[in-house]
Length: 86
Image 1 (cartoon, rainbow, N blue to C red):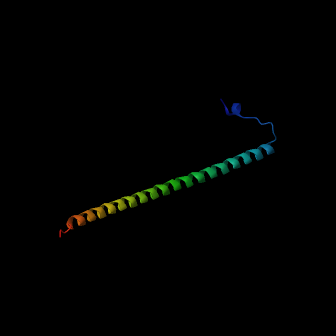
Image 2 (cartoon, one colour):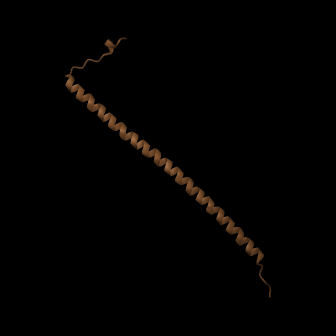
Image 3 (cartoon, rainbow, N blue to C red):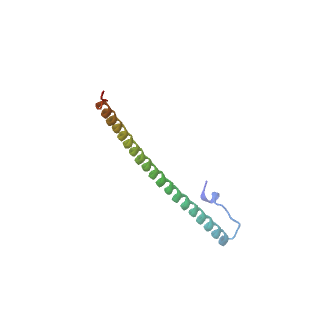
């Protein structure tokens, strides 16, 4: 199969075809550009949310550890202080 046999023959005038193809290409480029920007925004958003989630998780674990420490201290202090009998 040669290039000559696959060539498309348009019946419209060339000046109209050029304008049509240019407009089509520009629309495609615009659409692609918008989708690429949205994809980048969403990727950055996911990254931000993952970092934020990890930070909150670490903070929650730290606070849970602090609660356990305070509970142990309170338990120890109540064991040391036995009520006096009169």
